[in-house]
Length: 331
Image (cartoon, rainbow, N blue to C red; front, side):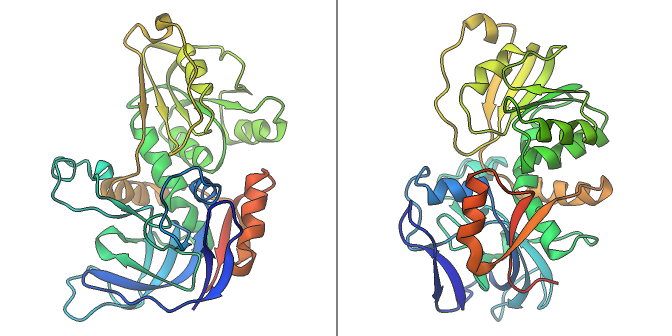
């Protein structure tokens, strides 16, 4: 099968003909239709995340159809079913985290497109426990971004509780998707972008944000919660300073630059800073049920598999007009 392979961080992916994977017990063989790109892919390619499986097939927002189910497997899927494969690819089910409904923190967890080969290929193998039926009404390209930008964004959003005034720092793919859910649920949205990014600010305002400004500005009201999707550490004290008492700052990325010091007075008043690590199957089930009811709309820019490096370069330089999605066998 054709696959784009990472041999070493900071090197371009290589188009190769590799052996089609074989599913083992409890796994599915999936014919990949589309695979959306995520900023985590850039972190892996650029060497910002440690110890990836090498050589590696990237990609963890996979949409495809079940091609093969090993004989005797107890699976909720049938041949031909459309499935989604996300970042969290396997957990041991036995550790203290798994047994306390915190499988996203499992020390032995494996991750699609990082420690397990992913979807920049014509076929992928995945643990059936961590695959999901996808909602009707989305085509293969448009549904792909829901599988990470949507899921991680949703987990970040749920950590804000019932916050009425919600700030979002960094208005990329995840922020755009979760903003739609927040507005649907009646939250007041305050959006912070890079200084001078007028196009993104206009987009956020058009979507329904109450206030839009630069990340170095103070919002007109104190926030009940803030989500930081940009991987910029100095945004943490900025967001903390913008919080009302009892508010929470949620860091929604897997990687962030160092956080500078800040005065204790900005934390006092029972303010909270927390991170989001991975996702759980419950997050996926809840979000994939909510998304079509909003309905959450995605914006994509498609590329053939062999142009994965071009898509990654455009992503890195901020030149994409939507989520980059690789097209393989899409309908």
